Amino acid sequence: MSARILSGRTVANALVDELRAEVERLPVAPRLVFVRASDDPASASYVRSKARLASKAGVRNETRHLPESVRQEELIAVVEELNADDDVDGILVQLPLHAHLDPEPVLTAVLPAKDVDGLHPVNVGRLWTDRPGPVPATPAGLLRICDHYEVPLEGKEVVIVGRSALVGKPAAALFLRRHATVTVAHSRTRDLKAHLRRADLIVAAAGRPGMIGPDAVAPGAVVLDVGQAPVDGVLRGDVDPAVADVAAALTPTPGGTGPMTVAMVVANTVAAARARRGDGGGPAR
Ligand code: GUN
Image (cartoon, rainbow, N blue to C red; front, side):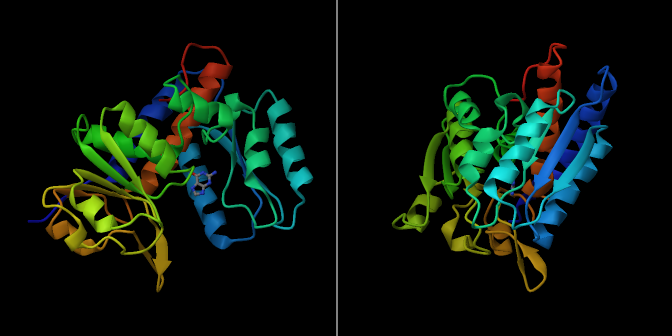
């Protein structure tokens, strides 16, 4: 058996076309500001791909690049300046921050209405209490992929590997909302394989290339691979490509969950602009 390929790139391209049409109907194009306090080339490359897609959707965007050595107070001052700028709809502080910076006060400084990452505690609370608000882009993208390919979720066993604030935890909230039975496994989980083997759907978000092999996946399972790390110059997911022989469906790396994440950031920006500028749209769900 060879798994159906769940092309995040295809779903992302369709979403960007929809967003572009939506933006064209708005009186003012939304404006997104990336804050990048890092000298890491990988971080620069991620922000560039988000900026490219934002531009493709007609979303105005710019990047504030601060040196990695920036002081916490200076970084927060930049966020506060963007909060106060009424022409800024979305603020995205690219993570991870350098070790001397504490992300928590920085993310909490972003106005919840401009928080296109959905990482402000108010927005995290909204997510877990089923209120409208921005949802972190990667898990929101996973749901979009499932919906596009008509992957049934109700009553299914979903096993998420990884408990990060960016992926694992918000993914748990979203799959619960779709009436799945959710297990969140992590580095201290005993017998991960036993959990994975009974999953109808696996979300691999551990950041350990190739950690999930075909022997850990039940025949017919759906596998969404969020892990992305360069191995010998090649981008590898958490899922061993041989899983394609067992799974019913699998996201590829690259071209899977990555492009969807980028598109959902843009969707969150358009939703934030509509909500802030008062022309009827609610934040993305
Ligand atoms: N770094 C990796 N993924 C993300 C993301 O979705 N948002 C932010 N802000 N930083 C990231």
